Length: 167
Image (cartoon, rainbow, N blue to C red; front, side):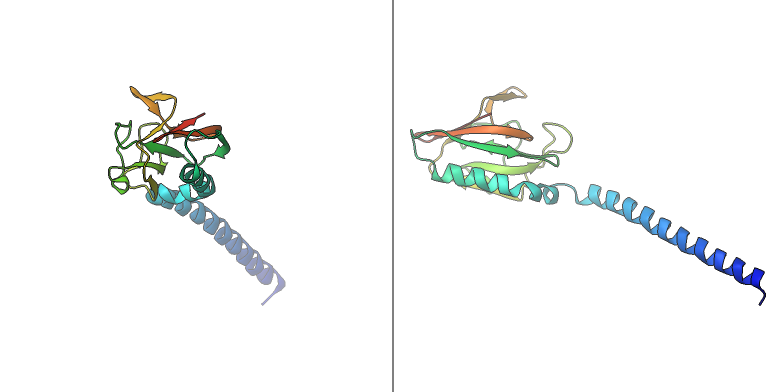
């Protein structure tokens, strides 16, 4: 084999390797995007689990008429903390996991408020002895809602059987 043929063969091999690497990169990005749409939802909310657990822990240990607890939360990835009261309707459907109790859930919300995947929420904590969890937000005509989906400083307090979560 002469030198020209060897150079051509080497050049063809290098171009083939380059196309393979670029093709694999493009395939990886497309498949990740496609799988993200299929698997969307609760899996991406796992990144917010520390904030969720901190709020649940505060609510469980909050004594009535004691000082207000403050907590900084930063809920991301199209997820939200949504509270449900045992005796009030909410702007989204209450998950079956809550039964007839008040609860706090980590829900995948998609791109808009009201397009919630709360019925299948992976994380929902029910609270014994708590009748209401109130907030100061009015969403879709429902008052006193708790909806947290970004960086917020929360003030959490308890009066008798009611938890108040204010932003």
